[in-house]
Length: 240
Image (cartoon, rainbow, N blue to C red; front, side, top):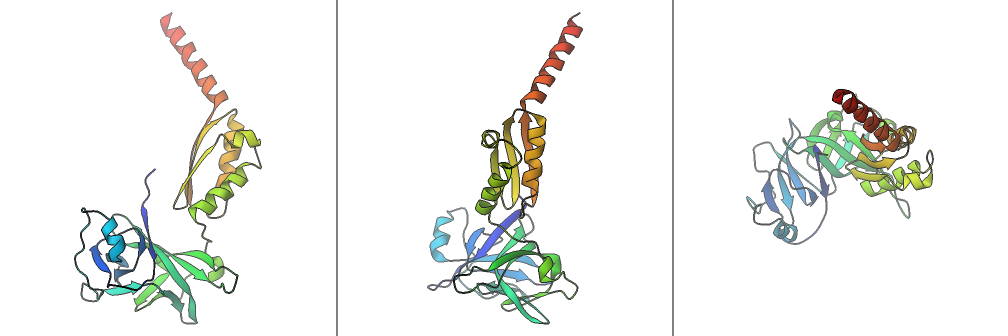
């Protein structure tokens, strides 16, 4: 499977000024340089320690954290989503199109506190009206916060799918299913006894909250046997 989105996750830190790389650098970053009109990431700010791990194929273009183009805005950890009504939450990560660098979605963390984790949601870039220093501005006609889809990390989503698969089909059959999750996109593969089991498994996985898309490559033994029998029958007829 190929994945269109690259995740850039803000990480704070102290020390030397971050190094600036042209384009996208996935994973933990110190900041991004954004062209505000198109919401396109033109450069990524990376800590010097992580920059050394990127290898010789990725070389920084500078050591400054100021915008590299006229009108561009640098966004770092602590970035907020705001509206006319005030601050709506913090943005710990953004997802960008790998080819163009354009921001596709943002992760918004709301609430939380002592012994209570924040609730994370996904907001599409189409709901963003503007960019300012330290903030993204929500459009006035954007869906309300209660309508934002929830976010689950891939590891959480994998566990939830495993639990969901164990409900409609036998536990032994569920263990034969390989579940691969990347960026909320789910790939099911493996062999089950019947097509009904394969259909039930796909339906259960698709219904888990947080699944963005699903590719079903499950194989049913009965269906495979039927195809083999049909093929042998065709070959026998051709031989006559």
